[in-house]
Image (cartoon, rainbow, N blue to C red):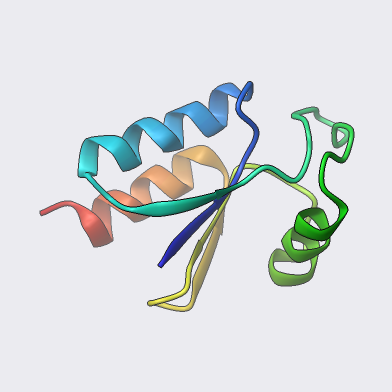
Length: 88
């Protein structure tokens, strides 16, 4: 299962969502906080806690691939990862 920690208004998160849609991948979305270079306002304490516990950083977008036990930060790295593992 793919889990995307993101923010709806974040352009980097949009890049990842677009790639997931292009690939027809199913995924779960978590919205832990608003976007921002210094970390935006936390919207959901529980989800934010999972983001930092699992990934170790307070950064979005963050992709967690539970099937492959992989975790990836940064939109470009996530798109590359998806291309490598989920494209056709």
